[in-house]
Image (cartoon, rainbow, N blue to C red):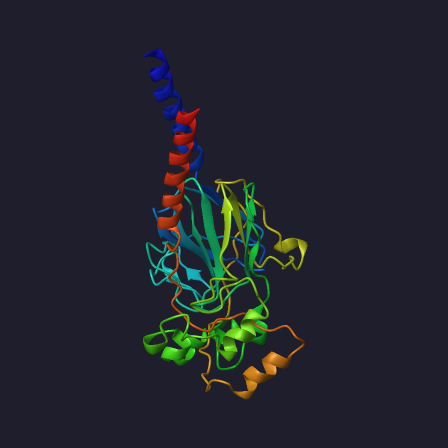
Length: 330
């Protein structure tokens, strides 16, 4: 009886430890290295501490997410909010009319950092340009095991965005799907499968600049990354440097909020971009310009957040079963 009792108690303790280690989730730290204030938006389940906030230049803020969390982060720019928090943003606005997005997603164009945290196994993450581009964004994993590669788009794609995709006075670059709204560019209708929806000329153009970022709806093979038990750093404008000492903010401790002095929000009013036909001369010239091509925006509708969760849970269950089987045999 004592021997059997030991067999029962030990696996239970091991399973509890295993699940606790896998249940820590991840710490997300958002860092603003842009020369301007960024207003990050957050959409995910379950809800984190906030769904939108102001992040002055040179500052950072951290959030703890539970295991199994699935969601996305993005940066809004050109925002104007009054003392009550009411207002809107020139790019990537979430439509809430408030600093907090309250469950609203980013209005294209928007660069998205997307995550699905594993339940005791791999996390999945990517940086997507499927819904367009407004800011350089990179993701770095810290303290995890596995490949844990850095990903993202550090290029300023707004500088070489083809005229037919340019919008918000040059502060954002639309996807071909958003600009032209055809099934071929959107991988919709008759083109709603990987075998029928191929990268467009825009997608290939943009992929060359940011080869690790999602460029169109079926760009999974080169754009999805994995890591286990890591924390993640999401950096806006990773290659930017402050223009002067006056532009440097105060980096905050994780979870402490922001202490850098915010800007006054005096950016110029956005202007709507002009649309042109696909494949125009401006897009061709962008392809030839100094070899630094834009990353693929080609087809909108970036909805891949939970592609991995069923597999993650299944893998966790199998690991526990195998462990118990070996322990009982011994």
